Image (tube, rainbow, N blue to C red; front, side):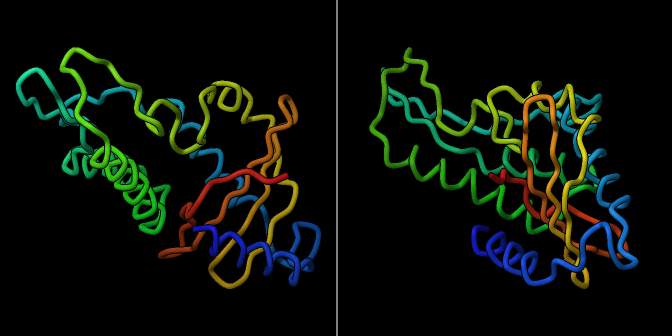
Length: 190
C-alpha cells in the first residue's frame, strides 16, 4: 500500500497540471464519494436488521488458559459491510483483510493467557478506516472539509482532503471502476 501511495504522490508531482484549477477535471465526483464515505462511517457500526452478527476475534479455551485469534469468517462478514456500501475497491478490501491477518499473526505468536484476563488487542480499538481513536473529531466536521489538491490520471485519482477545524489532512486514493469512483486507500499527509 505504501508503494501505491508513493506512486500516486510521484504522479501527483509530475502531473501538477491536473489540479482542480485547470483542464476539464472536476473535483465534484471525488468530493461526493468522500462525503458519502464520511456519512457511511458515521453509521457503519450500527447493527442492521437481519444482518449476521460477526466477531473479529475468537477465543480458544484450554483449561484455565485461553488463546485469542482472528476469526476469518467474522472478518469476511465485516468486509461485506464495506463491500455492500459500494464505496470501496477490492484493493481496499484486500488491504483491510491483510490488516486483520497481520493482527492474527501477532495473536498466534502470543503466549496463552489466563482465561479471566481481558486484553486490549492492538489495532482493533480504533476507527479502522480513519485509523483514529477519536473519529468523532473528524466525522462531526467533515462537511466543512475541502479538496485542497487532486490529480486524476486515467482511472486513478489522489486527493488531499482538509478539515480546517482540527487541521485534519487526509489523503484518498481512488480508482474508477465501471464508471464509478471507489476508495483504494485512506491516509494522512503532512
